[in-house]
Length: 298
Length: 298
Image (cartoon, rainbow over all chains, first blue to last red; front, side, top):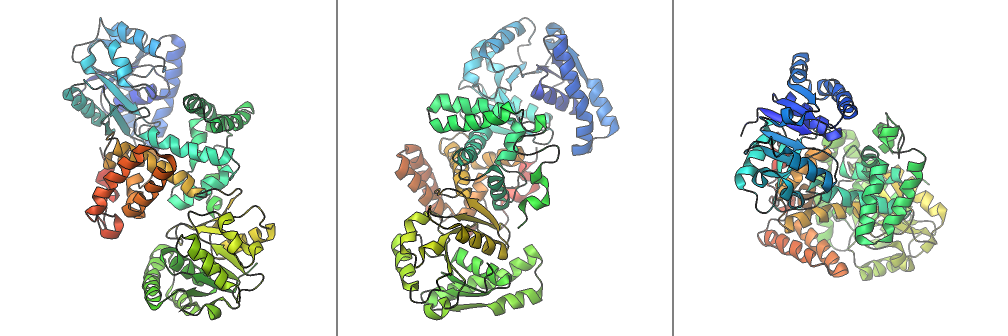
């Protein structure tokens, strides 16, 4: 399958990245959002990508101009959806919101149009019942900064036809994503199924006063030969987001160690130390201590 | 504290690395081992380090010659121990073996000599009772390839004096290790407390048929921006070692998912696919697939 028109529903952090990457890959792309404020916010995000693509990928001025010309934003669902080969849904993680949005697509969506959800926390089986064409629906999950961390985790419901999986795989490649096939529905896909236990293990050590965040990151960075430790990742994720994730683990396990993590994170969040977003988390930004050579020098 | 003579008890994988690094750092260093076969095996390991230090650290021929001159191997415990400032114990992880070795040091060891155990799985409290001078005993844990991954995790028993912790920290720095202070006795120190949950999470995905090892590693490598995934690390660790670790988790948790991991690993081990050590594990060696650019290309 080759997509000629892509629609992204919701121009938030990931939605705007997916749309820009699609347009950058040569596809006419439309962002649909629900009101002027959302469109303005999406446009502000889009305006930052040309510099990043030039810096990170060496994109030329011509490529960036073409990308801009292929990309539009609209409040009109009918014109957005009509003729779309692929629709990527990147709205809030509430089932009720996704349900009403999927139902509103019904009058305009083509029979063969792929509907992909970028959900991080829900399973395809929880949403497929609302899809206009259930056989053309699955989950495609993107990592933040998709132009650098270009993976697309592809997860489907038990009854999804192989042709739909194949078409989604083709689309991932068309927008230069490395497709990762998840053979069985799994909360967290592959990436978060590994990343969150790693992050939790580091948070437990901190909450239990075994070692401070800087020592833990130094240890990880030197032992693994990588340039960022768990607390550096937490600053990128945002400590407010981390609290929400830990609350989920607390609710699911009733393990009181998660409460200790939440309490310690809350102190930082209350002091507006959310991480990269506020310029201060476990490290200072834009030049966090861990990026200096001295951080891991003896 | 500044060490002028270091003894390493046991010239195995880590013991030989610690001794070579100590000698490379300008300290007269002796490896003690229990029989000629062990001494020969240690010598064979030592013989490989000059090339690696030259390649990885740019060590000069003069430095390597001086290192060799500072390093000796012996079967004579008395001459090894006499006058040593630091003793690093790197023998098998059996309490009974460590107990009898520690007791045999008593007649020769100086009152101020530091005795450091490189144990990976035991806590200082479990061994301190056997130490000739309990106040001068703690755990210093090294990562494999210590000349590159130069961390020393330092863990002590509740009653250990601060001066001993300070002296151990000085010694770590003297042999160019980044000291990581573990403030509370913790099985697995910092590193394995984070690394093993990450590895287990990846193994669960494999054992549950959620994704294949190559897909999991690709996903991790691109998403995290690192050059090796969990299964690449497992090949380095050795799949036989991994089975032993997973058996420990199975015994401690009674979680039958560990049995599925063990069963799948056992198939590879039975086929002599132990990882880097046998040239075949999840990948082929010496040039594993994941090191080729094509591995993560779209």
